[in-house]
Image: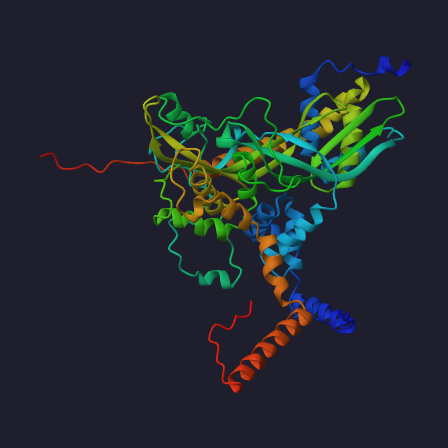
Length: 370
Length: 157
């Protein structure tokens, strides 16, 4: 018998009212504005945009505010919002070589065209808490130096000149990039779909998997060919006009990982690659993505699949934190009937054992509960 | 169509692309100020929108290889019609509908021979200058963080 129960309406309403109160916090303090979140918590906003797979700073900041800074909750809110909008079209692929570069570093070449541009980085800070930020002291303007205008050349292009590195990753001309928001996931999948999944994947999960490859679980000898951060133009073909127009710019982070070389009787040895591209400024995520992208190419490159990071179905099925949080967190919702059924089963089994014992006919192979 | 004489034929695709690109990066205050100073403001008929939707942004594997879907962005678009029969389109990242409507109006005005100079001098020129100044500033701030390597001289032995 299944008994439906209702209740909790007043409790739920009051809980949400309490949530709104706690979100606002102490009323004697000014409320944080969306503009302040965009400007001063920009990397939280970037993470929400990347993992929600929706580029919109204002809406991502709204989600951060609404979620009290719980970023996975914010990602969930933004993902839910995107389902309410129609899709106008698909952009022309962004040109990261033409990026307005704000940071670019290479761990493989010291002197390279465009130079090592540190940009606004946490690297080389001492990770000491800064007490001056407890108050609101004035911050000096950034230093400026006249720009050389030199093209910030891709590291992969430098190596490609000598044929020392594999090409960017080509598919046949007529291949249409897969879209996991439109078709259910099927394994094995193409590298295009994997990259889409990784670009929206949980930063912590991809970081841990990338780290696992460094510790020996699917080692792939990575070097950061380059990491670059900056703005790229988004262009859309507009049917009414018959040509592509610019919609504006977005900030992205790109990582070109250069990995262990491989050769065969037919091809001379050359470096292989992993690729990372992420909305906003997030080089930890872009680097993790490129490590995992490379690890997931194990089969394609004739390597043994032995480690979790190389297991496509495992990685891609568990990289989405909205799906993951939905399934984990649903456990706290009422399971009264399921649990009553289990409880009744355990009681019956115990009663059966008792009865068997009393009858002096002990059976140790009693079947265990599920 | 009689008003056609008033209209610059769209042979200058590059010019139209440039105008559309600048209008997409226009700020609301820039568009509003230009609209407020526009002599004899036309009656504008809304044809489509303004409406907000999504554009799937693509990247390329390895930076230059096969395309893949990176993620979506919000885009707001509008199409309007001027009394002259000229249609204006606007598409811009974000959700600002008032901005898309005004950008579509200026896209249409730019196509009219009599209004192009006004649109160029009041709106597009200043936007172009602002973006160039912002880019120059970013480039200079970035250039100041460029590493100058120097080699430590080692003893010869």
